[in-house]
Image (cartoon, rainbow, N blue to C red; front, side, top):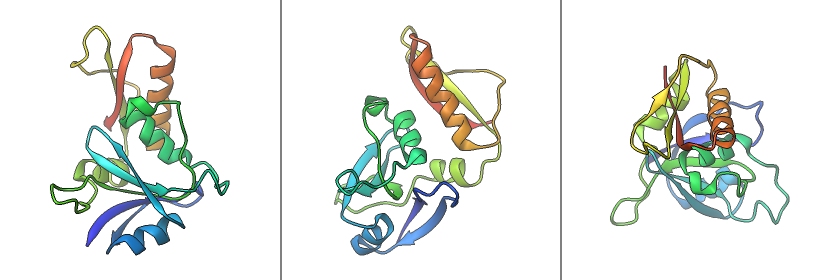
Length: 161
């Protein structure tokens, strides 16, 4: 059994930790065939509806924020439509792993957030400020906004305050 975070496209519904037993459970969660989209920092995978764009599903804005902050190569280039399941990346045998504890704690048990940045001049050094957020979505939006408005920003992340 794999623990994953279910991120419904309907923003009036909360994200939730669920247990998944295999492909059929993932397909039921995303309402169709699945496609794996990897994210970084920490390594995780989003299972998304492979035909979401074709079927005209609504954009999952929360999943897009996660993708764009955790994997900058996708930033602003595409969107994710429909429901999403966030799990760990597969092990060496290809078995899906549970969502990383770091993401589970950040998205489901943290109550105050901050964002941090690295710059192109110092790519390994993370900087933050005193601004705090009580909602992870707002923290991710602010981090993404900073990445788009300050040319020196290399990477962004959201962390517990």
